[in-house]
Length: 197
Image (cartoon, rainbow, N blue to C red):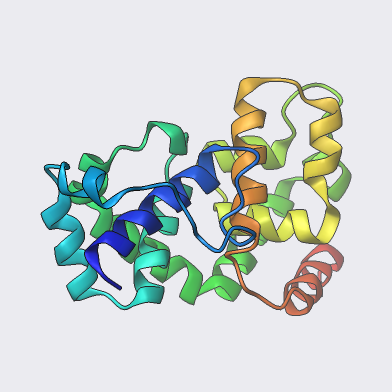
């Protein structure tokens, strides 16, 4: 990947995680960046360094990890990624590489004190599962898995109309395609935890 391609990947992923209508996969990571705009940037050397030190897939994962780790991806600026992006990427890799274990731990903790209905009930505002995510007790990856199993996003979209859920809902939908997992073992794991096997 050239430094300019690295920059375009950054812009495309920023659009993906912050704009409702842009889809990184649908548009094959295309963005309207010009070579001139790239050369006018003071941080272009950082993109050059990144393109030399990481493979194409690692560059995509690097940016994805930084956008999903931010409460509001729209407020993530390049200076922050330059400063703490590697640490964020490293933490994300650790989470995704031990996702089965992480999901089991977080699910056991969540359902130790709550039933399935209680955890996803949003009749009185934010459901327990969302509060647990916002408090850092469950990861965005576990939330994506719950969404794949129960389609909680659709349910919450109908019942919750607030800026906090709107941001989480967008992140959930946008991150889903980047989390390439087989859902069946997680479903089995969840069933086993709920039934106390």
